[in-house]
Image (cartoon, rainbow, N blue to C red):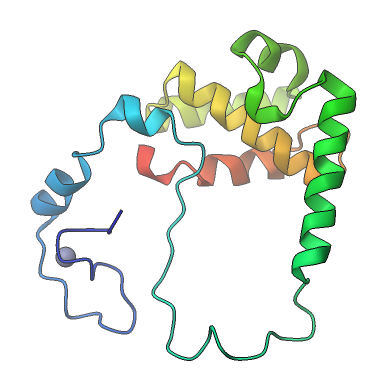
Amino acid sequence: MNPCNCSFLGDTANPERCRCTPAQIQRYRSKLSGPLLDRIDMHIEVPRVPQGILTAPSPEDEPTSNQIRQRVEEAQNLQKCRQRCLNSKLSPKQVDEFCTLGSESQNLINSAMLKLGISARGYHRILKLAQSIADLDKSDQIQQLHLAQAIQFRNLDR
Ligand SMILES: [Zn+2]
């Protein structure tokens, strides 16, 4: 979706161009209902792509598509070994069983739920996402950093 009616909100190349009021922005975003948003795992802000960047050669230190695919496949194999399915397919009951949190992480998600008004469905989505981030990191357990990243991907809940 666009960030607002005119689509220029937050555009660093055209900072003056959006004249939408906070009320208009709120109305525009409320077209996406809470129950629908709850069913979307990740909310990510994507800035405008500067001209020419898509045709420019990638920097040397950037991982290649093959390297990224390999990381994803390794994370998926971890998931299949642990629970015989991918994290995205876990039922709420399985999330509680497999995506366990330490007490500090539990406090973090509890306060995020209160502050952001996250639903039970949103809670399980965040845990699955945090587990996927932990798997990509080859971590045995969800660490606070993984959880914090997963919570950041719910920015439309705010
Ligand atoms: Zn606007």
